[in-house]
Length: 145
Image (cartoon, rainbow, N blue to C red):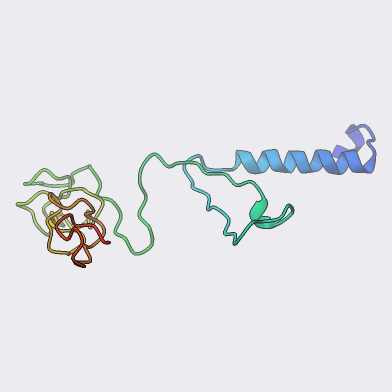
């Protein structure tokens, strides 16, 4: 039994030591590529609030899809890949046109010339992921506002 081999400690020191061991075991179990979520807080948190507790952010080396997004295409080709975009022709919706791999619909195998569908081609759009509002103010730049 473990208790028989450990020296007797005062109760508060035993609890403190146990909490340190648990914390170290928890940290050791963390996956180095997981991203934690910043706690939501409104206003200025007061000490002792859960939102005031420290949080950990570990940046992932490779972007991961969010809910509702297709996973990024694998760079391994299984079968012929006529356009060389890393998506095999058998699953590539555009086997003759390479995917542009710009972070928007990259899993379908087709290039998207206007990601935000505002009518301004991404090559000329200063905000290719945000649609232009066409409010009479710098409507040609592709950015809202």
